Amino acid sequence: MAEGSIAAGAVAGAPKAESEGFFGFTRAQSVAFLVMVAVIVVSPFFLYPVFLMKVLCFALFACAFNLLIGYVGLLSFGHAAYFGMGGYITGYAAKAWGVPPELAILMGMAVGGLLGLPFGWLAIRRSGIYFAMITLALAQMVYFFALQAPFTGGEDGIQGIPRGTLFGVIDLTADLTMYWLVAFVFLAGFLLIHRIVHSPFGQVMKAIRDNEPRATSLGYRTDDYKLMAFVLSAALAGLAGGTKSLVFNIATLTDVHWSMSGEVVLMSLVGGLGTVFGPVVGAAFIVTMQNYLAEFGAWVLVIQGAIFIAAVLAFRRGIVGEIGNLLKVKL
Image (tube, rainbow, N blue to C red; front, side, top):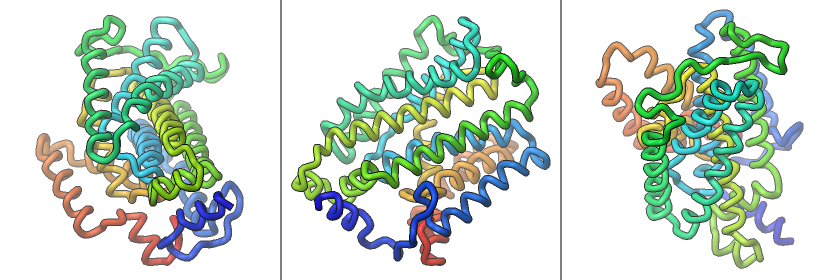
């Protein structure tokens, strides 16, 4: 009965629910997913694969961040710590230890989750702006560690990270071959996040977001759920960071800097918080803008700020959220 109350409360005020099919997708989400997969399959034959891999890595990062803020209501300003350290560990394991790429990426994911465990345990003791500030402070500690630790290479980072051979058979040196691995990692992470959100665990997460005292009164240990969501989000951020380090053959301080945490917030807001496809659209929009406006130099940051303000004022639900509201479907 408690789970029924949770499920009912979690969807209050949402668009009229559609029947759910495979993997929890509604009919509209199924169409959107098939379109997304089609775009992923076709794009490398028309666009630069390295650019597309960057989009997919940041899309996974934004989806991981959205799992925490969009479905639990916890705003973290420190997700760059897990993204960056995932990249460092993956890069170091591949270069110094000769670990194959599939294991190196999983090691980056594991380190992201392990780092998120103590950080989340500390941060969930507070809420609101205090939670955000704790995550930011902890992330800055990780940045200082990455600057000083011998294995990270300091300001030079870890350069010349080999892509290696997948399962000892598939050579990942070619960009197109590497693209298919990145696409698989992204789709696996995306489907995992979607399954988490639409599981009984996900219903409790949304109930905590909407009304934590009510979830507590129904007998749920909300701190345990928030910690689990935090660790899952951190692990998936580490997965994205590890994949990115193999794509670009380098892991640098940029990925653990606080500005990276700001970028993922922007991606999620522009795409639409609490939507399945919003972070993907937001990441594609921001990365594309950065790529094609790079000739403007520092003015890119000004343009980003203007877009952020416009998104907050005019599109409060984000791009995907507004489209879903217009079509009266859940995306």
